[in-house]
Each structure stands twice: as structure tokens, then as C-alpha cells.
Image (cartoon, rainbow, N blue to C red; front, side, top):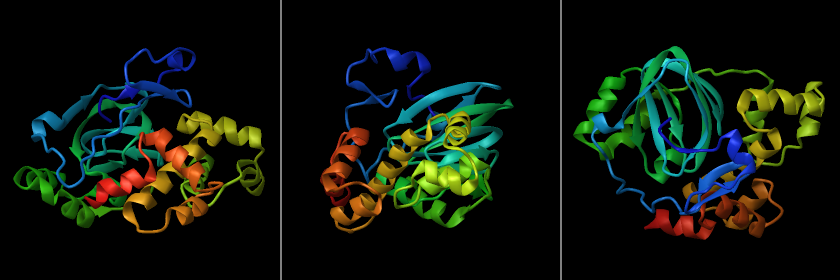
Length: 266
């Protein structure tokens, strides 16, 4: 959620018009890298992290350089973007890795969320899901914000999410390997044109663009959370070579894979 860098339809054909911002795939992103913070991230008080979302609002595609987790206290909304589609309500925790992007459709009663800051490593290892006692998590954050990752890691229960054709394709694109969209559609008995049309309507991006983002995010996750050789990560995630992966990660984040490893190892 949060206020982010908007990538609206009107921006697709115009310059972003802001310092340190550039367009990538039709959306505006900061060229300045995310803050190089891991275990010493800032932890503002809860009141500053609480956000009220207006009923029936639609938030355009926007990207967040800094990682965080949105904890829903009341109301509901549907979020579509990196990670596919999610329908969330009270108690849901939605983890947003660094440089993730999404759009939101708020329900008719609006929603209240608390945007909890995460370190890069936390956001790339924690899972979204349902918390049985959200208030206890907020109390723990207030008392000891550095224990947040441990609490969330042991308190989140996975939940079922939409399982239509766009959701199945988004899930396939989030796995290692290289998915050929036309072949995937043929296996499902759906034409490539229909796949593109329905996926774009549901997720907010055409599948080819989503595939690039999913592949790059997947490679970044492996770079940050494993010691796997970079050339192997590039192969696993369908890049032509290590240099190709490096260009993609730098394009998304402003930093190279080696730079990210240096940050998280500090």
C-alpha cells in the first residue's frame, strides 16, 4: 500500500518529469538505489505507520523501493502486482519485497493498514498470509521492533488466493526457469491473445512484462538469500547469461547483484 511513485497511464507517453526518476516498462521508478539498510532499518512508531484507505478507491500501479509488510486491521481490498493477485481483509499480512509494484482496489468500507518496515533480507524471506492476533504483533513491534521478523515468521498462516487463469500464469512465472507464454496458453487450451488480454486485465501488466519483473525479482531473492554462484542463478531464472541477469537487476534496483551481496553481508 503506502504512498509510492505512481506509474499512471498518462505517464506512459510522457517523461517522468522528476529528478532521479526514470521510466521502465511504462512506469516511473527512482534511479536512486534503495537505502542500503539491512538489520539496522529505521522503526517509526505505529501511529506514523498507520494508513487509512478510502472506500472504493483505486490506486494506480506504483513501486516501492523500500521493503515493508502491510498489516490489514479492518476493511478489505484487492491487490494485483508482483506476486499475483491477493484479496485481503482483517489480519492479513502482505509482504512487499524491495522494488515491488502493485495496484489496489479498495472495498466499499475502506481499509486501515499498518505498513511495517522490513529489512531487505526479511522482505525476501518472509511470506504473506494471515495473522491470528494482529494486535499482539503490533505490541511486539512497539516493544522490540528488531524481533518483528521472528514474530512474523512464526505467526503467519498461508491462505488460499484467487486461482483463475491469470493467477495460475502469475504463479508459473514466479518459479525458476523460462516460461514461454504461448506454449503455456496452448497447454491450458487458451490462445496467446486471450492469455494476454485476460492477464493484463486481471494483473495490470501484459504477461511478457510481468515475466521480466518476476524473473528479475526471483533472481534478486536468490542473490540476497543464498550463496549460490551468480552464473547458476542466471541460468536457473532463464537469463541468457550472468551479464543479462546483472543488467536486469541493475535496471530494476539501481544496483548490481554483487553490490546487493556486499550490502547484506555487512
